[in-house]
Image (cartoon, rainbow, N blue to C red; front, side, top):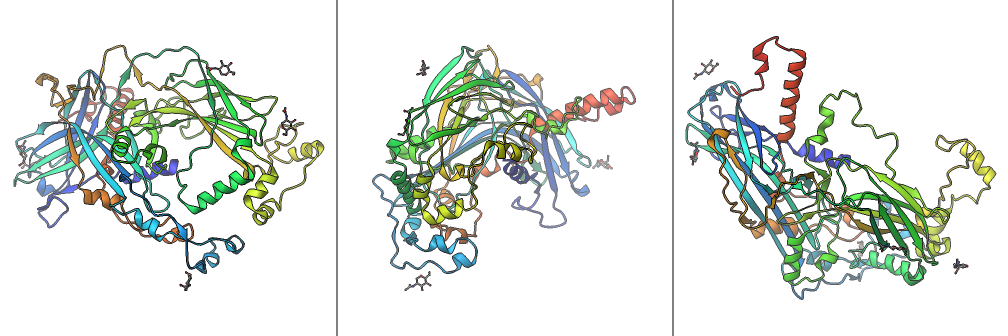
Length: 609
Ligand SMILES: *[C@@H]1O[C@H](CO)[C@@H](O)[C@H](O)[C@H]1NC(C)=O
Ligand SMILES: *[C@@H]1O[C@H](CO)[C@@H](O)[C@H](O)[C@H]1NC(C)=O
Ligand SMILES: *[C@@H]1O[C@H](CO)[C@@H](O)[C@H](O)[C@H]1NC(C)=O
Ligand SMILES: *[C@@H]1O[C@H](CO)[C@@H](O)[C@H](O)[C@H]1NC(C)=O
Ligand SMILES: *[C@@H]1O[C@H](CO)[C@@H](O)[C@H](O)[C@H]1NC(C)=O
């Protein structure tokens, strides 16, 4: 998770634009490089957010080349879908004529010779090729510019020999707009896309710089977010029953997946397995307050079948739904779309964009290290036994949890996932794995040890309490277990307010307005959303790529990735305006505390000239 977040941070480089005929890069000594930053409060319903625009011109000779600078703020949303055409059929993956596997598979260390010995070789060619066939698939992507608002902040040839800062405000009507979050596309493991959805949204500030010679450039100046408000939810205790099930496998087309499922069914028939039911109680109801823990109990009941429960984990996760893509797909001839979309949607940070994510940049008085885990690691995991078939949990719900919110292309919803590990017999494992692999995996497994042995063993580790037996981890468990899931519906509201607020997709709602000061008077106008269709060639370049393969013996060879067009790639690039605003406040606070009245001038270091 952390690595993924890091990757996004690296992508978020500051945009520097140069004055050149096409606005793309410096071309000679007379070129001017301009950079723009915004720091501003987050947006919220019926709220006036304050902010400042900073413009820096890098070359001394360019200080007087800027005629004017306007600041634009806009909300962009993005959605895309790839679905089957009506009555289209993806070719089956058939047994290959040539049953010889490439001979470097073993020598390169990717596979074991013994595992390849009886392997059936399939021809993935026609199947892979079908992934980029426009006769089979429909791809569609569009952006919705929900609103855009602009004000001129610098006029009349300012002297930019030093960076200049100008204040502005953004007035927001009593309307809830979506909260913003970070996301990025994930590469599929095969390099190819089957059914697919993706969506994103972003609020960005753009500085529109007019040069004295008449040229104009748009500079990304940062991004922000919106904090929708919610009515106080009910806090009645919540009881819920659900049956555990194996997650649907969306790769049933692939022979290796089919073989695995067939082996499972042959060795561990589904109707002989135990049925597990979860009974969940949430003390304070299923509406979760961000910043306080979610407390509850899950009890598991089982019928007497061929599987046994072993451990359980409970955690909140982002259970996003994609109403726009699903609607397009189902009306476009692919009725099974929703059940069959694979998980390659993109990486979503499960955090909303929030200043709370950056506490490590601000010296806290309690000296807590924000990177360290709390001592008592969140209690969302435990072993289940017949004597204690329940788990009491207490999960931290960070203040940065994305509140539930439906937007134009998708809906953000947090749900509670309960995962139950169930085990089956060693005989079934042997049947599923085949004798060879089973033998290899069990070679190191010790015989059952006595309680005395385990007491002794427990003295030789650093986690077993004294006088207790070593925490017995059955080393064969991993090869004879299944993970079952059930999803508990919960509600995560954001900030609570009793003020009536409309949802932004209700027709006729006004949109935020940017102004140079409150004195200009805030007059809201109805939003006029604009839909911008992405050219089909660009969407196809992204979703109908023809390199890559589902063949497990070939996919690792695919190493070439091409840059593809992506309108959403720039969402939330640059700096988060809310963070820079918080730094300003913290710095001013710091000045007040430490340099009180030393120099009046210093107090104004953070204020616009
Ligand atoms: C069969 O495939 C192997 C490995 O790809 C190759 O070396 C061999 O030449 C092929 N044989 C025929 C008859 O195509
Ligand atoms: C702009 O300001 C700098 C520094 O204050 C000054 O040296 C320079 O002469 C000014 N340029 C113009 C065109 O006024
Ligand atoms: C900046 O340039 C654009 C395009 O030439 C023009 O439409 C706009 O009015 C200019 N803005 C200002 C504040 O002069
Ligand atoms: C859940 O199941 C238990 C046991 O069968 C039952 O007592 C309880 O009423 C059920 N709760 C709900 C909310 O259906
Ligand atoms: C559960 O099933 C096993 C094997 O079918 C049987 O030996 C055992 O007595 C059963 N236990 C209960 C509580 O019914």
